[in-house]
Length: 241
Image (cartoon, rainbow, N blue to C red):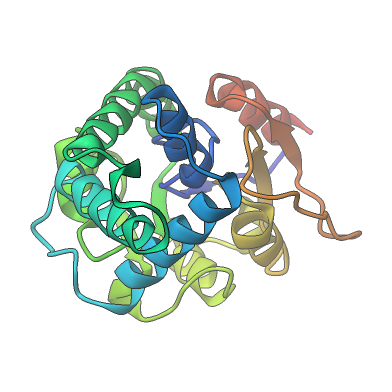
C-alpha cells in the first residue's frame, strides 16, 4: 500500500486556469478582443510585465486577484504602446481583457474548487506558489483559504521556483517524508523537476504550455494529466500502486 500522506499544490496556472499557462490565456483573450499584434511582441510584453511585478512592490498585500489582473494588463499595455503605434490598443481594452481573464478564472474555479475540497477531506494540503505577496487575499477571494494548512509564497519567503528549497519548505510544513508527498503543478521545470529531486511524487497538469518542456530522465512526473478533472483518478492510482 502506498505511503501518500500529504499533497502540495501550485496555484497560478494549476488551480485557476486548469493547466493553461497565464501567458497563453491572456494571449487568447487578446485574440478574442480583436487586438492584432505579433505573437513574439506579445510574449516580450508578457515577460516584461511578470518581471516588473516580481521586482517592484506594485502588488499590495491587500490586492484582490481582480486588482492584480488590472495592474498586470496596464503594465503590458504600456509596454506595447512604447513599441507599436499608439492606436493598436484602444483605451479601455486592457480593462476589458482583465475582466475576460477574471471571468475565465471564475469558470475554472467552479470546477477545480470542489475537486480540491474533496481531496482536502483525505489529505492535508500545502500551497507552494511563485506569487506577489497577496496570496492569502486571493485565496479568501476565491473561497479556497480554508483548504490549505500552510501557504508558502515566493515573495514572502524570498525564494522562487524552480528552487527546490520552496518545495522542501512545503514538505516540512506537512511534517512527512518527501516520498509520501504528491506535488501538483502545471510546469515541469518549476514544479515537477525540482520537487522530484527531493523524492516527491508528482502529477503534471499539462494543458497549454508557454513553451515546450523537456522531461529529464530519472525525474519524470509520476502521472501526467490534461485536465484537473482527472486529478482524483491520478492521485488514487499513485496511492494504490
